[in-house]
Amino acid sequence: DSGVTQTPKHLITATGQRVTLRCSPRSGDLSVYWYQQSLDQGLQFLIQYYNGEERAKGNILERFSAQQFPDLHSELNLSSLELGDSALYFCASHGHDYGYTFGSGTRLTVV
Amino acid sequence: QKEVEQDPGPLSVPEGAIVSLNCTYSNSAFQYFMWYRQYSRKGPELLMYTYSSGNKEDGRFTAQVDKSSKYISLFIRDSQPSDSATYLCAMFTGGGNKLTFGTGTQLKVEL
Image 1: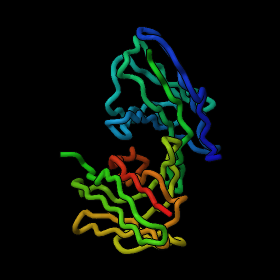
Image 2: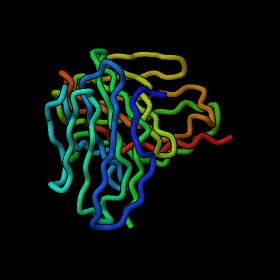
Image 3: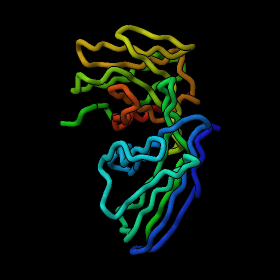
């Protein structure tokens, strides 16, 4: 157990739908990073939050949004889903020791 | 040109072989370097973390960084079938900034 918790582990949904992925960072870590991993793209950075504030954005689509709550858990919202959004979505947290710890991911399948 | 280049493999070696995995990068601002192991698209697991140029050893694993050449390596000694996985290099500039990943090298260690 890495200490980073992601739910759900698997999600199957139809095109056009909206889903929410959840991440709880490792205890004491204030930063949360979201990554997308598809077969042909590798791990792509989506967005970073630090203590509730958005800190950096990567290649995140406008249909996607995220937030970090006061208890530091984060949610990634994906809307108007397309087949190409099928991927593994990982979150990671980062502490003062500069270690980036990843969760086990959410496998999203859009049908 | 990608910021981080990594040969995707696949790389197949016999059990007991020494494995060499490599990444090159173009952004001279990268200061921290990591190697992750990922089994069957599970969450990436941190193997090695280095900062300065030179070698760092941990058991059968040695990480090498050459900042002047913008080149990092991971060596695995006495490779085992359980080492069969995808190995991802990752790096960041510091200050809690996002990790930038290579595409990963798929390694298979055969009996």
